[in-house]
Image (cartoon, rainbow, N blue to C red):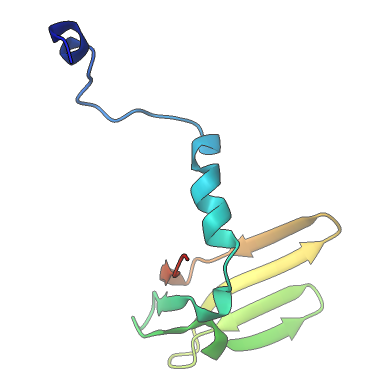
Length: 97
């Protein structure tokens, strides 16, 4: 590395658009999410997604905490679109292989 190269190194992180995260997000969303560790934002309990309580509705699904019954995830799909609301989840931890 030359002196000129060192002068071109910015101490600030680069800001890119969301396309730069595509590779990581493909890895994350291509795994079996039923084994994901879900932390409830309300009571801070941690459990696998598979243990959440599912309330199936005509418009979509609501997944709630088995400990405190707080709504963790809302999911719906219609035609070629889907919606995912995870406001009740403080942490969603996945194992990537």
